[in-house]
Length: 121
Length: 121
DNA sequence: CTTAATGCAAACGGTTTGCAGCCCT
DNA sequence: AGGGCTGCAAACCGTTTGCATTAAG
Image (cartoon, rainbow over all chains, first blue to last red; front, top):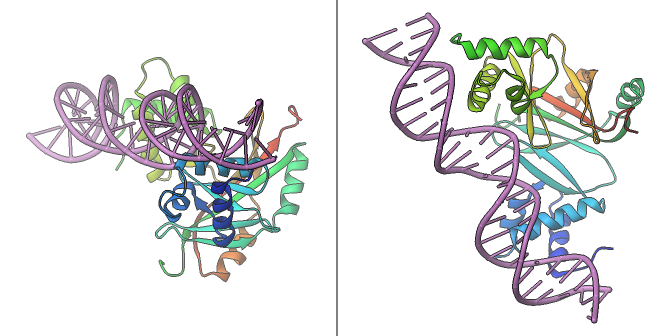
């Protein structure tokens, strides 16, 4: 089970408010000074992932974390300003037919669309 | 324009044979000993990307490179053995409708499906 | 009590970069 | 001849890890 520590409460509370994918460093810098160590942020985010409380994405070389919501989502990433725009996932039937062809047992999937947002284009 | 050097010929020839996504290191290790430096592999792969000869993917912390083909493809990635299985992309209409909603100008997209391949499950 | 979580600092590893010399054109 | 390309080694940077200390159950 997951021990409830001061740091974990702070982290979960933060993630609950900001419900967009955020990097460990973004989170760390947003927290009150000295709230916890950067490695604690990393370790706890990974712990949360193990317990399926949080999902881990990857954009560029950076991992982004987000509380798992009831709905699976994807993101439009702006090349210029880096903004993330959430879109609904309607891929289940496509993924099912394609993976069945290869007898592949799906665990997860990840779609990212790159381009320019309305402000930047 | 792109200067034709010994190293670039070797690289392109290699990519042409092996038409699956490969990491810089995989490529480097596959080349005859001393064919070129690792940083030359990286620099040239990136150069090729700039010139749209090569596409750059990202799986885990590693970049994969592949000669651009006429068709856009996606990959099933096996959690266990790391194998890549190519599937066709049928996402254009989904992406078009979703991005139009947000006035987003698409440059590229990337779908990766994780799970277990037939051998490993 | 005893086991897991934390802080700190150092390591990691894939990728990038600075620089001197070399090679295409 | 000159600007791009290469090799080498060092830097980079987000992430991970080892270890001594602290706190949760």
